[in-house]
Amino acid sequence: MDVLKNAVPLVLGLLTLSAESFSQTRDSIPGAAKDSVNISKRVVAYAADKFAITRPFNIEFTHVAPYNFSSERGGKSLPDSKVNSFSQAKVSANINFIKRKNWLLGATVGYRYTAAEAGLVSSVGGTVKTVDGDFHYLFSSVNFTFFSTLFNKRTIYTSSILVDGSEKYLERVKGMATGTMILKANQRTKMTAGILISIDPSAQSPIIPTFSYEHKFNNGLIADVVLPRSVYLRKPVFTNGRVSLGAEMDRTSFYLYNIDGTSQKYEYRQLDINSGLTYEHLIAKYFVFTAKTGMRITPSGRMFRKEDSFGSPVFKTTPDPTFYFNVGVSFNPFSLIGKKK
Image (cartoon, rainbow, N blue to C red):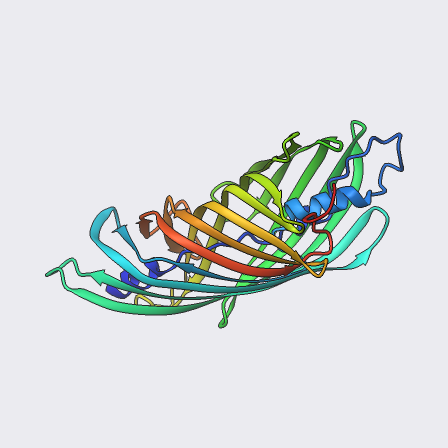
């Protein structure tokens, strides 16, 4: 099990699969103003900017400063160790290939590469062993979105079939469904509420409520809340820029093989809270350059057998807070940066 200890605590990063379930919706104009399933351009832009975790095309790089972590296996604490380096590259694409008046059919694909090095302290003798690892994670989904009304409110229903795995194997087939109602939307305030259902035996919380709220103040500040994902206070700057202060939650997940001398497959999964500053700049109308920096807080990372769930780990890590930096470029034809909403 020493190899098991060595392989797991190397990674933290970010990922939320298949955001297409939010990415093209959120109508806001009262039904009397226009057809109940005709999505206004302004609301499509709002939805794409707020909910498209996977934009039409996105590439980004992340670097994390060295950090210490504690760990335990089988309820027994292990010596504190240190991750010396961590870097990550991620590419994703989100395409709608059939668009109709009241429904969309599309697909999401993505790849993430992670490289890390750690100095691990032995529980016998306190010697330090340097290990490194490279992890490849691939994901894709087919997404269906339907626009309708419920209680005279715009409502969007989505369903997704998701698959993920590594460069070696296809590992999981999962499902997700959402329902989101537009509660309010005008020039100053937009608000939605809904529910997300995850059809995944490994999920710790299969049902998650969702909520979004945006309000523009007279001084130009914008409160932007998308729960459970992010909370930001934003401010347009320059001609095509925007600076934001707040926090967002992301996830890393990857698979491990041959780590204990058996054919048992494991998954390592970790939630991260990234807090700090974000700067976005619109380039050539549709490309958005993004830079993020601040502190990363990871409540817990867990490794569990593939057939088990996140709530039944065989190995746990608790990284210390650390500094992170992220840069990326995305293609987003619905971007609201530099535009009047």
